[in-house]
Length: 379
Image (tube, rainbow, N blue to C red; front, side, top):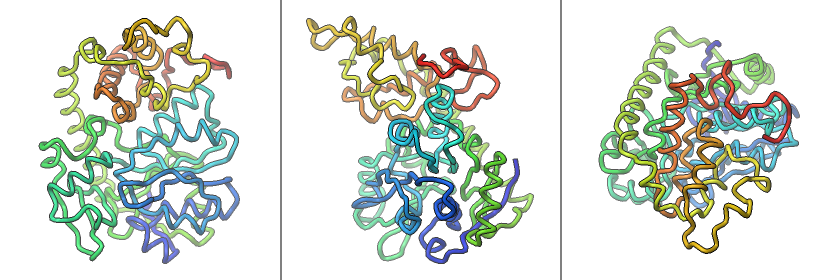
């Protein structure tokens, strides 16, 4: 592991990107050098609350994807395994994205040799719907006037079309039921260290990106982008490294506090009683990969005589199949029509599994999940 500060040598990227534009520059380098078939990134649609995944094959189009989108909690790993399994692809990952990709690599659903993971330090994401409501309620601004947003120094900061900025403390927003998604509030993996590099503004000087280089592939990325003349780097000061570590540790402590506060509040059986077995949580889960062969599609799980069907078998299979591999991405919460805190239940059980075995989903190297097979077989 080593550290560098980096910024783009491309003026357009430098202006459009966040904290130095290093991420967009590295992605451009990969495309221009033909090292990947394409880049999977997020691009805004109508506004900052509506970013969606795009597959970029022309580096000139990367400019549209520059910047951060905290109101677009998309899971990249799920998209890669479903649509780009046979391509060489680069993509950015939040910690939960990285963990999902690692779990899918373990299941032989993604080939590590075909991917570049550009990690993004993450303080959390915001639901696009509640994000608009939040800005309308707590900021002196029209949500439609917001052109960019960021989370920095404990604040959710918005930039308006006139160039002005407004900020509100995340803590104050969350006390009112807004701010980061609930799964993000309890997430204790803040830096995606199994990505090739991990980038962010923690510890960075103004106009620079702080990059943690995590493996040989990551070092080759930095060296190649520098040689291509698109990236400038320098060493961070000891104070910058220490400052970044301090931010990470503070956020982890906050997450642990939220875990202690929320885990005791949920009763699995009480919550499951509302389940209508719509399968939405299964379909959106980045770890559920078996699709047509899914055990839950078998006739003996269908109970057409009971509407809604009895949920315990459905949820029991899901829990036994992948609760130990839950990465707490919160996608299941987003789609549940009955407002069941699915991710809270799964994350709570994943932590119990960790306490017994030491296994952290998508993070542990020396411990394998119980459904691991060294062979490329359907598990």
